[in-house]
Length: 359
Length: 230
Image 1 (cartoon, each protein chain N blue to C red):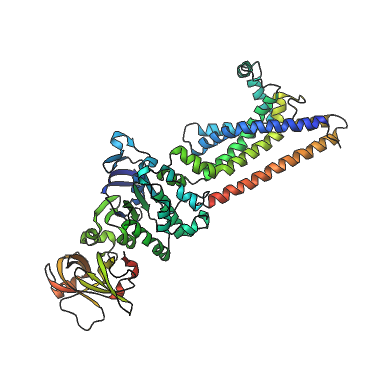
Image 2: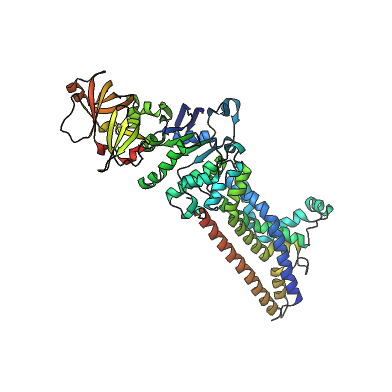
């Protein structure tokens, strides 16, 4: 999908150019960055001042030619933050709403969707009687059953508390990794959701694309750190579960060594995603001895980025993975760190919350 | 206190006129309510004022205007006469008077129901593949159905009670234009007619009360349906 968009409203100007491929493309930005407007323009719910949109080479919007394919023909089923279930229909009727419009080749089996999202016990209920998490699961099921070309999700978890979020995230991960191979555009201001789900990340700021690319690259790009928030920045990498020990810790293998982490629920052999926040990584020149932190990785400094403040960002090569560490400029000077320096990255097991471990 | 055949005839005629006027007015009122609720065009407030005019005009004036427009001597009346639809001094004229007088009430109830529908539900339906007409049929219409019914009930009740415009436009002809309220009024003009008037008045109260209660119940259903949307 390719999108070019120029639109002004309420004194705010949107001017962007973004791409989404297969898998999950996340659009991140603070509130007011233009995320929802962008999504509405893609869905066809908004006619921008200027714009061009194509998917798989088929143009859907081209203001220069006066082309505006209406929403029902674009087939970008949308899951909104407020679920928007039809109050006069039961859950089952909501699910079936879009099925009659689904193109023959794109029908997803109803039973598969019901099983994937655990909807069987809800089918006879009225939307008003559902919890927030249940509503979002129904909204997601309804979108899938309409046979969409792409799924648009507008802050689908923003109105849910942490427990409800954890209830839905595994479903979304399953959707991403499952057989459907449905491209998803996921709009969110929550990096914990994005780092678990996205393959590609687009960062919006004041109506413009400030950074975009593969998730792992953008997340470890020091230039993107101010956009993401310095406390939220950090590497995303893939690990393989090696073993679970009796004391509750699990050993996970990454390209640069092994990690001992708590709260890993995935079974042995499974591949999981880890998010390692830059602020949780400590650096040491020498092999640290007699410390409580269990995870010590041999790494080499890729680059050191200092700004005008007291902080510094260090990108590290750990095997084939890239880590990001946030330290002070004074520490950089004390340790004499520069590109190519060998050092050790130290990570506490407890620094990794189970919420930052996806599948 | 007896109900003679004239009273029963008046009740039958009133119901007949009310049913016809409601059936004709509902689709028209829905269309006008829709464009008032959703449309953006010049002259919208003028249309709204025109629709509501019979509510504030003296009914006699409305009846007089209808007579001026639709008497066989007037162009509109003559044109309708030519196609076999005579309005003046006929039950069909009573139907027209009832439509005009009930229209503001119907439009109001329907417009409120349409305005209460969350347009974001309609957007969601569109992204699921429903065309504009499919959205109207499968989302908007079911959500406003109680409002349409409430409007219809109000219009029906108004038609049952219409007096001033009807008697001015189509006079007081038993079996043709003498509806229940007109029959009550006529009975009161005759010495000793109080008994019949009282009986017919009770009948009229019962019909009106039933209509208002039904309308209230339906309005409550609109509220709960639309509240459930979050």
